[in-house]
Length: 380
Image (cartoon, rainbow, N blue to C red; front, side, top):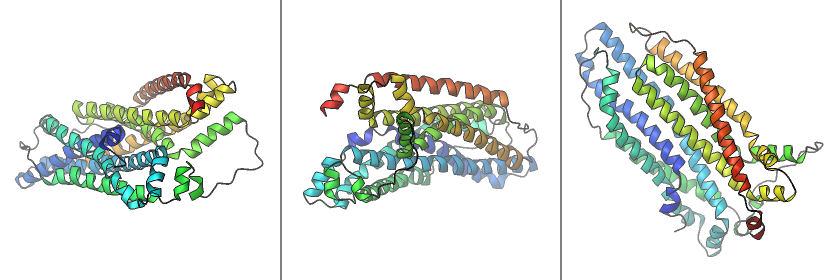
């Protein structure tokens, strides 16, 4: 076996994102299926409006949040597979040299789907622990009749089993495509043999540190996505949670805040850790040539700072548009619904916390650069 269960257990990013996605979708979908059973019992006009608003909210949350987290899980899965293949090129090359086909080797990558299984199962079980409180908060005003919590077999099938099978199949397919290269290219740690070499820009003589910073961004586009996504989650969820306290319930506010912080920390730490580990040789050589720790950090990590600001801005716009749609369209006919206006103090407070947290993380990883052993790198 090329890939083991221990390897799949390391992929905490997929586990956490899958858990968050299934937790949110399971809560709202289960509530949607249970609330649908009382539709025929409603006769009051206000109750019907409230019912329609609750149904629409469940659909919007599942489509928007679930779809966004699903896309991120796919990107993270492909990133993990690519990273694994890059780190085990020689072993995979030896297997191909022994006569193993690409599909035979790639078939072992099904275990990458276990990360989705663990996260999805955890999210589904956690949703049932939160459902009693969630149902009570959703109907806190008593507008609808009491809604009993029911078990719907279709939900674990659609949210746990099918995603696991789909991600396992996707892992095998993508791995087989990544392995379509000459065996010698794997044995020599050279992936350029199977891809077109990009032309070097001519006529521009950039300083080394600036050129390294640009090169790091250009060659690690997936990590740029993770940085943007991390700041996007922090921005959107922290600002939205402040509004949810008035628009929905304190439970929803706390849940959104926790999910946003967990997703932001997971993806940010994953991205920065990968950048440091993937550039240990570069850091070692820069230190040999006399570059300071600050210069190394700026060249490798400084380019991601503008990306984080872009992500924060996108998250701010996203939460504003989503809440506007919720209040002005979904709940527009519901009496007593508070008006929603953009909260600038909350945005500035969220931005301040984000800047402090981001710079603390960068400082910690700057200190890690000190620990890169020049001797160990040179002996490889």
